Length: 522
Image (cartoon, rainbow, N blue to C red; front, side, top):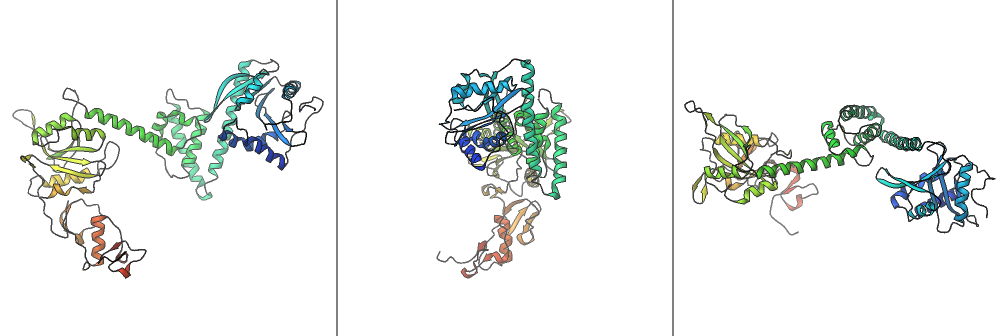
């Protein structure tokens, strides 16, 4: 049988039939020695490469005329043939001892000085190594890696120059792929918004490029800029704006993100946030473990009340808790329970304190003493405790309307809901433990707010007014539906209309949100 590469017979450019294309697809997907994701990614590109007109391309057939394999090549560097794809069935119907030498001689006769390929198939790699192909290096292409093999047919050029040309050629091909994907991404935008989206992408890219290019030690060249542009375009498919300062920090934290087109900005932001939380947690743990011997051990002053008489401080470590306990006589600093919860990020201990005043006689600040200690649960967003000084063996002082600092405590709690924790979350608590407010009486159907006692009908739940405590809010069959709607919103934050409240079995529909009335079977 004639070899595939007979010098006397010059092959014309291949044009595959549909049967041949289907056979090629089947051979490619059936190469068990090659990873499945590589096969699936390459299957259509094999056909395109076979039809690119390269003089070394061949379809391998058996004596019966069945397609049993293929050789698909491409030239990236002059006088070098890159064997891009080589695939066969288990039975090629060909003698490799004749075919491979014929292939090498044929390529040399055509003027090729080198042949090279990336070895995705270990079995084939071992065969070709017997014919003089040598492993040169391992190349990374996106998330994949493969050994690069080469055989010299005729030494003519400086290997350093050839190697650089090859690297440049592969890089240009990769950048061409990135540009193509960028154009495909832009095509997903409708005509009405495409221009605005392109401007947003261009502005973001220019801002980031200026900062990244001037960052010492960070590689930011053509590849990185093209990848960043593509990822910005993908991000703007589902977002109108982008936090460029956070993105800049995230890239500096994970610079490999702009070296490959894999991975989204959404995921980068998630990773950045997780790392920030970890840093914060480590910092909180370190602060919580500080002792009296530490040179820098201050309270964290969150804010001062409007009267200027009191402030809220966050207690950060065991010495802080111990001093709070020593002054007020309660247990916050007398066990490991509270400090361990602080270290785990479960709670914050806050101190409502007097603002220190300068004693003109002594020249010293006086009055920076705790008045009440507040336990805030970070997980449930609940004020668990508001405790003053210990007044008996089993009882601490609770907040009372008669306290001279009552209005300042209300102001402090209101301001506290506008502040943020170390992780950036608002302390927008919606509940104060009822045990802490038992000394405060509120009339039925009234709310005790920052503005005083208000009847629930006069209260607007959408204004964000701070509620300290509610009186009894009873809903029964005699309650009007308008009143029931208001109570449900205030007490349970349930939004509904009068028509969505049922008072009997026959009023219940698919739209019903609340039922007021006697129970009935099922």
